[in-house]
Image 1 (cartoon, protein in one colour):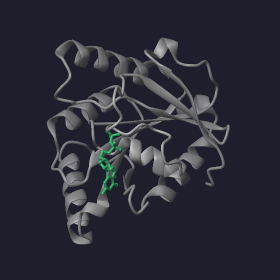
Image 2 (cartoon, protein in one colour):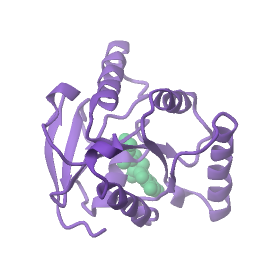
Image 3 (cartoon, rainbow, N blue to C red):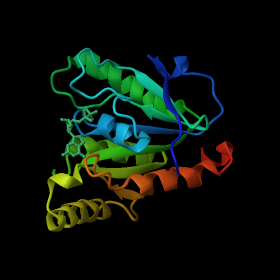
Image 4 (tube, rainbow, N blue to C red):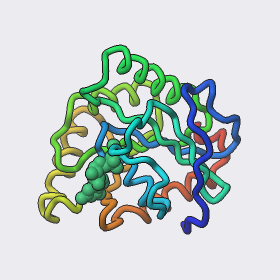
Length: 203
Ligand code: GDP
């Protein structure tokens, strides 16, 4: 898929305040610093579309970006940021879960995992929650350029084996780097295929 246009639409504090739209949307989530903003910028070919974690005052909002006037990328706040207060963490969890469970337009959730790390409890628990609630999601390994090709293969395969010890099958898995842009076509092709389905068939 060629990205012709990508523009920020709106930031919303809760699912009930999200724009009333009838286009497919694809949400991106992961632990703080996992590389989510970089991935969104890489996919859209825009340097500063999503704010990176170094942006001061990066807030706890649901951000909609309209792509090619045809579909949305939704940037959800990062979770697991240790320096957040307990009440902020609770508010965040409520907002994220509210969006995921109630947003009918959400066709797929891309869950980002830093390819360098072994499975982390917070991510595994989150995936289990997604599974229990029948949420369609995919796994996106990030920062592959930081590993040698052998290490990249081994670590991501080990991660998948870990999941298969618990589950019968894996969700779709993408291996990406925002530095060298690997994985870009695979994710955009996947979105293009999903966009062909009527919205009501995907939710
Ligand atoms: P976010 O908090 O999940 O939005 O993460 P960011 O996109 O802000 O990235 C966090 C840090 O990781 C930044 O210093 C990025 O430059 C770096 N980073 C993100 N993606 C990649 C990648 O694919 N390769 C490399 N080498 N660094 C990355």
